[in-house]
Length: 153
Image 1 (cartoon, rainbow, N blue to C red):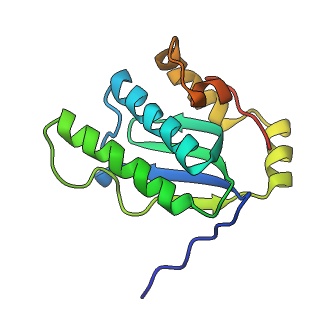
Image 2: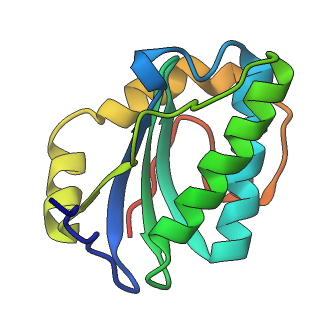
């Protein structure tokens, strides 16, 4: 049975997730997180993706982004491939780093705004754990999305 096509269009707000293969770590230290954020930053510029929020956990990540074109899959392919090559080289590994396809959900903008105003943001709480990794690190992405903060479309 074939996979259902991804929903994507210019201006779509997506919640994107990817997890390590066999739920293993994809970020072992701050150096890994910074490298991943560097690849994120490059992708933001290259694919014209706007980041609203991100969380890097030990074995997975969450992103809330808006695509200016219908290019989410191309961007995620570049991001996951570049980071997997880095990770495998650094730790002298071979094979998959990520478990299957990334997950993505198109988010209703009005629902997102209501939820983010009513309740403490899950993303803010988790992103604060990694804010120390971003201190002193400057890139186009870090200027648009300060650590520990979310912006809304």
